[in-house]
Length: 197
Image 1 (cartoon, rainbow, N blue to C red):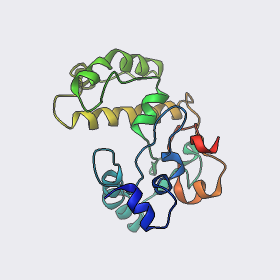
Image 2: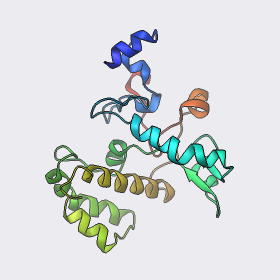
Image 3: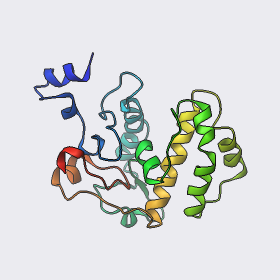
Image 4: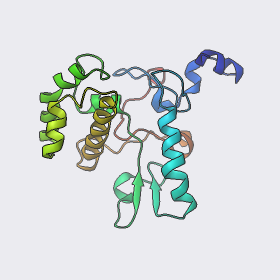
């Protein structure tokens, strides 16, 4: 079970062809996992399945007022009382956008703890004041359990959203019909894949 074998079975030229454009390596970060990949540690497919199954599909089926960025337009135009705007964030991309560097694996508590001062500085730049509970969580490296990485990822995603909404990051989507209609994009990402440069 490798990405290369799946790509070959689908008639694709290489494993990278399983990835959307926004998931591919840029000059600033390595490639993310293909959105449908569900095996191993470097996968995002399970989270994508959960989001679609538990939030998106039921909301759309019920006719809920949901708008999907970037398909429905720029993020600021999607924000309205009584509506939900959904956008994809990528924690590794958010980390880079916020000017943060992990001093090790974000799966371990010690590197998350070492990130605390820089994370507080990023929040201050965005005029975000953490609650007492969030400050305590940051001071504890988001906990010693396996979910600590997920808690950090959630904070990074939220700060990424704040950065775009406050104008610190652009609401950028490549001018490519395939990306704008089918693949989508990662909120705040401006770097294009290395092979397109």
